[in-house]
Structure formats: structure tokens, C-alpha cells
Amino acid sequence: MPVYDQVQQKGVLRHLLVRQAKRNGQIMLVLSAHSSIKTLGLECIELLKADKFLNEKVDTCVLIINDSLADVVATRDSNFETLRGTGLINETMKILNDR
Picture 1 (cartoon, rainbow, N blue to C red):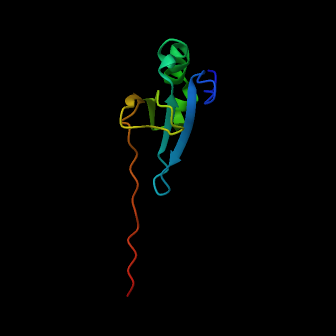
Picture 2: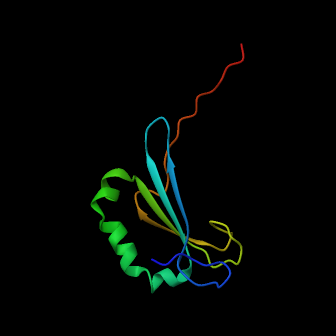
């Protein structure tokens, strides 16, 4: 999958974000891509969905379609598609007591 070139405005993959919840170990994979992924990267999406390692280790995977000129993961106009799982991970936060 070709990496997106901001200057030439060509390519597919803009950002890759991996997040792991510290307490329960859940892992979220977020792919931010140009809309050309729907044609150029369709095979890659299917490979991600079928990948044995990802299916065993990654709890949820989200694809964000971002055609914005800004170098950001998502904008208000971005479309989100959950490829695997619920699209969310749960994190338990420890509340500190100042007593």
C-alpha cells in the first residue's frame, strides 16, 4: 500500500495509529487513508481482515477515510469504517485520592 505524499497528494496510507490499553491489554489499530484505498488498497483491506496475527492480537481495527489537505488522522468530514471488533477499546483509569 503506497504511503501518502502530502506534497504531491498521491498515495494511500496517511497515518497508522496503534493504541494499547494499559490495564487490560486491548489493542486498537487505526488506519487513516486517502479514499483511493477503496480502489487501490481494497486487496490490502481484505488481507488485513483475514490476517491471522491481527485477528489474534488486535481487538479492533478502524479505517478512516481522510481526503483533507491537512496532515491529520481525521477531520469532521472523514468517514469511519470498523474493519474488526467494535471500533473501541476499554481503558480503566485509576482515580487518585489526595488525602
